[in-house]
Image 1 (spheres, rainbow, N blue to C red):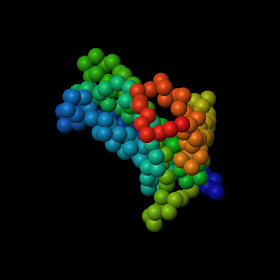
Image 2 (cartoon, rainbow, N blue to C red; image 1 turned 90 degrees about the vertical axis):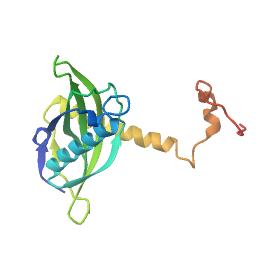
Image 3 (cartoon, rainbow, N blue to C red; image 1 turned 90 degrees about the horizontal axis):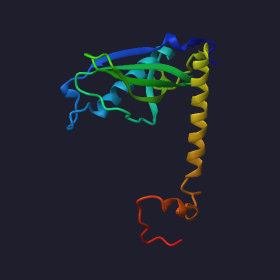
Length: 184
């Protein structure tokens, strides 16, 4: 077991980038894929800094684009290690966009990247533990535990071999779907 521990602030990363027309999609807003790429890069940098190893993205937990980002806005991404396992880390990433002339800042999205530390041979390696030094760091760590437990429970509920679709037909009545060729 790795006996080394680090504070989250030791590996926190912040990057800012001006959004250019080349980053936009057909509607003139910044392309979501471009923002996701930036988020992945900063999660990698943060996890690598914490683990002192090369890291790979294992999963991304829910990305909601809350507000569009405009060409000419300054986008700032902030990343922090929220949780550590034996070889993995959950990195929280927050995206904000600032209108340069007015200084108005908007929260555009947040997401959680699970990153795994690897050695040069590609094998997973242990990461330093996390020192929880504030109510915020405790909240983030526990929130990750709960989110992981909820995801495992959801996955079990909808396992194909155990899912009883007949028990869920009532739920479908509130949605814009039509059943065809299915008999209850």
